[in-house]
Length: 463
View 1 (tube, rainbow, N blue to C red):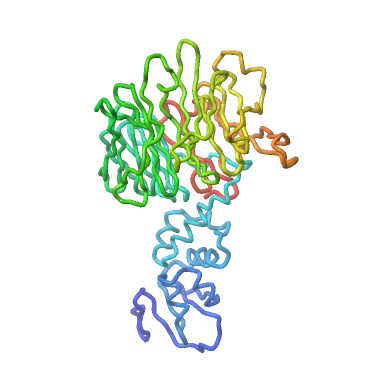
View 2 (view 1 turned 90 degrees about the vertical axis):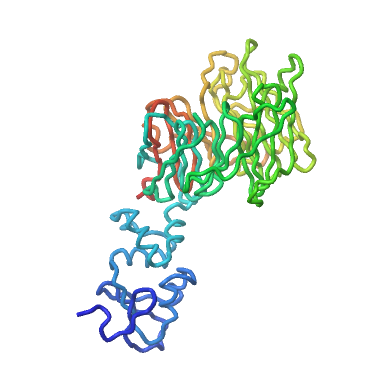
């Protein structure tokens, strides 16, 4: 018998049969299985979805020729906002296709990649994302909802939020040193040996725009670091002759990436080392409306560097930290903790400085063994440090340390941090970690000489 005999097919591929319409309860026939829910629950799917259309029907039992088991998963998602535990028995890609039919993919995405579900004490390696070719990752960038782009050699490989759809494009770079996701399909990418910052559409594989800094010597401008706020794109440039550097600010709301201003323009004169150090890390501090720009240099006298905090409105530095003793191997800033954090290149220990000290003489507080500060062994060389929420992650060799604040009092001097084991990640000994980043409820890790990306996720939430 034809599927719609004796009924009136609707535009979305389902049919209806007459019932009493006086109740707020809606009955739906999916693949021969009856489901009952409320009109309010169906309206949670959004005004343009199939289920929202069903919620507006009067006197009918719509029939949908789809998988009833998958529908029960999506109905539970509408009711609670979360995927039920039995969703793990399905391939995520199958759920994606089914959610697209009903028009609720955005709800599946929010549930599957919700950053609030990130559990740092319960992380385990849940997935390996293979990369094509023999090149190891040189840069990694993520979006808030869990899609990820990985630079390896001259290529960029992208994985969507479900980590099931993969695409790889070739670029003009021999290798990419800096990369930032501007959206799931667009990245800003640059290299220290190739002039210009490229805005690349990774879904279509073409360069939308190339941004350059016109320096005094009229030489090329290589990219040292990339950062962004909601309104602006920040790029640290150095002239190809390595005798000048600056930070350019571009308008993100303008599709043409209009230059807004230039800050931190330094021309190198004589042996003035500070002016020779370009910013190699840029981080926006939204609660203070400041841009952190950090850079370091290794020379005969050791490793030296500076961390500057720029006010974009005035174009001036409002605070500067000179790094002469145990300079940072890497540093980051945390809005949630209101703190600057670094890992010392000599000691390999984690240090913190409270942002409420802005304008005062800086004092770093060592969270580990302060006796290592002057050992000169470079135990922290190559280490990375990042904050995520109110947690601090620091890579050392093949492992990652997790530091958490213990709340004792409100005073700056009362701040106490403890080192914790990061769930099953403490058993992750392997090649040296080169990069790690956070997207959605996942942590992405790359290692030296490995052609894949590790995905770490809560064992409770992970698919």
